[in-house]
Length: 122
Length: 431
Image 1: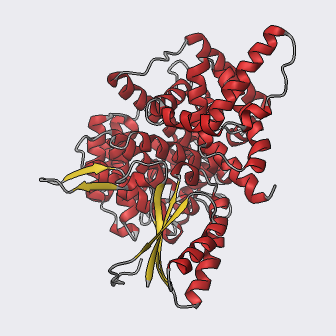
Image 2: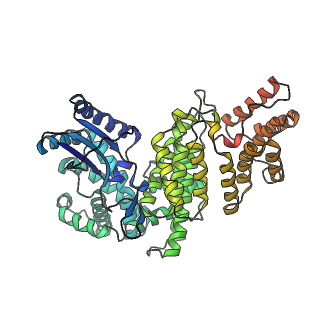
């Protein structure tokens, strides 16, 4: 089953990382990602631009466009992984590995209902 | 304590700083006391967090501890006798901290940070003092770091900051929550201050670029913070977009020998794609509001450069129009000078020259004026006049990189004495 691992963290905190810190975190995460890739279990990985770059469409009639992210919370959705896992425990193990590489914040682990890989490459 | 812990704590302190110092300032109404309280809280954090683990809300923790410590200091000074060690009181903070965090949410958060930034951009302070104060108080850079970035001695920077603080204290600061009109005025002041910080870093020459880069990065961090507080302000989107798009080119702006590389000659593969993407997303969003301002127009110009995969693909017609709009919103001879570069691309060097001739009296001491003028004259084959303009530019150059760049033009003039001005570059597009 595919699981989405959604990465939440305080944007003020992540935004205060120095370039070196950011690169160090990404390097540690890459180690976990490579392991999953070699097992053929890693799908798309996305790091999102800051929530300030986001706009939200409220599906009213007529639809209303608002600046900023959907939820006003202390921690923001900053990115996500799609990983093929046997079950929830397995997916939580992956999240634990990622968490060891990038502590702080939270990962929301959600089973994926419909997944289409799509045809674009970044 | 592992390295990860130390790095984590330092980042947490940096990110909590504007909110915590802002709240402490509201409480004590004195910049020095607020700053000292925050420093003391940070010292406690360095001691307590590795043992007890990080608090749920670092900012709330720092505010509460900072406040308690400062109050104790006042009491201690009054009674002239030491109080018992109060570490237990702090380690027992969990519940209080949660309740405080709840109360902090929303109500004062924006005003505290805005007030903190506003104090630093006090209109009575000269620009250099505004920047120094903001970097010290809002960003928490050490005096040593700031002095290094400004290329002055630590003592001189210390003095600059002390003077700025004294002036701020003298002028008094309104501590009530600002009204709508006042807030938008303050917001513009704060935006200008962030832009100043950015420019201070961006105006680096080749040999100082690495030292001053942190100023640009800090300006971006502050702009993003301000935008998160005011998510629907198109000018704050414009400002953030502008500095992201400019900074995205930083890796391509200087050659190995420290000389300036002009926009047209930059290796575009060195441009930072993620920053450009963010800058473009922000200016796109800003434009939807249909409330144009100078930052948005400048960001839109930067976006047209960023979107062009090669210099030839640059949409100069659109850039000309945008500079025309900027001339209306923010008329200045420098804007017209920049517009002239676009005009030269669209309508040729003669039209561009005609546009800048009337600016001569106002820009008589401006390096770029003579650089641009010289380039137009060179393109028209008026080499003797071009040479005079370039000589004047060299005399007015602010950095060795600027002078070197003009000298390159001169060398070219001397080399191909034939009156053919192919390959001329314009100084004003250097950035």
